[in-house]
Image (cartoon, rainbow, N blue to C red; front, side, top):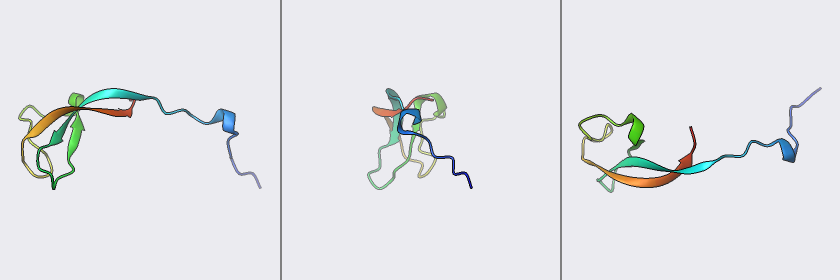
Length: 61
């Protein structure tokens, strides 16, 4: 039986880049989204509070 294990050399490397995101201003909420996907009203889709701009290291898409 064949199990498709990859060799260590063949593992895909995740590239992290500094990305502009908007995160919820409420400390109890974990909502955030990339700048490219944010709505025009800048309200958190999870709780409805204002969102603040910040920079995070995220995988490149």
